[in-house]
Amino acid sequence: MPRKMTRYAVVGTGGRVTMFIDPLATRFNKTNQIVGLCDTNPGRLEYHNDRLVSLGHPRVATYLAKDFDRMIRETKPDAVIVTTVDAFHHQYIIRALELGCDAITEKPMTTDDKKCRAIFDAVKRTGRKVRVTFNYRWAPGPTLVKQLLSRDIIGEIIHVDMEYLLNTSHGADYFRRWHREKDKSGGLMVHKSTHHFDLVNWWINSVPEEVYGHGRLAFYGRKNAEKRGLKVKYSRYTGQNTKGDPFALKLTDSGYMLDMYAKTEKYDGYIRDRNVFGDNISAEDTMSLLVKYRTGIVLNYSLNAYLPREGFHIVFNGTKGRLEYNEDHGMHVIEGSKKNSSPEGHDLNWESRCIVHPLFGRPYRVEIPKAEGTHGGSDPLLAEQIFSPKPPKEKWGRNAGHEQGAASILIGIAANQCFVTHKPVSIAKLCPQLGNRKKLSELK
Ligand SMILES: NC(=O)c1ccc[n+]([C@@H]2O[C@H](COP(=O)([O-])OP(=O)(O)OC[C@H]3O[C@@H](n4cnc5c(N)ncnc54)[C@H](O)[C@@H]3O)[C@@H](O)[C@H]2O)c1
Image (tube, rainbow, N blue to C red):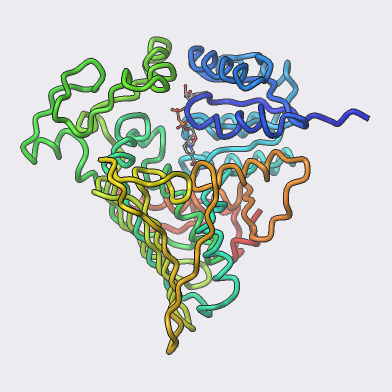
């Protein structure tokens, strides 16, 4: 009997979509099929259709965003993969469910609490499934931390401290395009920190309860630049004399940027290389939070997006000891995916470290396994889990549905509210559908 092919339609054909369509077109093409691509930009649709052909996949039908429903009717997918700009995820997730498909969405699941509640309602109404692709859970370091914490080596966790550092390469890049507009991305608290909040929720197996914090735009943007005596001479970099500007990104310097963003700009005016010191930036670059969890644990978290180096460190303090985990990233590449180097190209021999300090015992280091592939080897493992007809049995609870997707974004959404009101924000009030379950593993 011929094997049943699983059919996928994809909405949002920008940079990230390759993580889904490339494995579908190659490693997993015996049991899967891409049946349609959808985007607001016909240029990027063609770009990815050409790439599919170069990977050996047949050309697929393409649809503009306004024809999303027609795509579903005509191509009859089993699931829709959502890789659009964050603020539009909910539209496609909900419509996919209503039209009888499951949805697989990139993080963040969505950008505000109203859209989040609407996704819960759609899941309830339709009985369909949403998967949120938290690839960071699948990286070898974070998986090791989960394994160690599950073995109770530091006892009951009481307190967590996490500092995430974005540098002037990767961090700045969020201020060159749509991520800098909070109505498109939810700001870095939602767009970026959703990864970090998800990791913490999953590591400590707890649901967040209350959030308090401060955030501001302190480094990027015209006002901050001019305060430091910098003159802002152009609103974008390509086509300008940017000599001596370390933040300049020329779309003409890379074939990928040229084809994906410069040549397609005429269709929708998406400018990929805006000056990080330009106007109309609504996202913060400096954020500090306190998150209280339903199990009593408190997380102290910060994210700064303009630093000389990139990576993060996290500390778990427990009743039997302390676990310290550190990742240093060269550029924005996560340890393990490439030989890391500083932006100047010097080999700085970056490494990640995991150290356990037992109470009254000798501290010891735990070796972190290496993995191949993008995002520290997490992307290929996640793709296998989603697309393989027989995925390896998952022992660490790394698959996440809409409820776990919500538990992560709601911290960022609460933080955004708190930045305005300066009052603590209750997660249960933002999303009553989460109920009063305490453990993350109790959520779908
Ligand atoms: N998990 C990860 O490591 C990771 C990494 C990068 C991006 N992402 C996520 O992937 C998603 C896409 O990010 P990207 O870097 O590819 O961005 P991108 O800007 O390169 O691509 C976004 C695409 O969405 C399209 N689009 C915009 N508005 C649309 C609409 N209303 N309807 C349909 N399409 C629309 C754009 O034309 C563009 O082609 C984001 O949600 C982002 O958070 C995740």
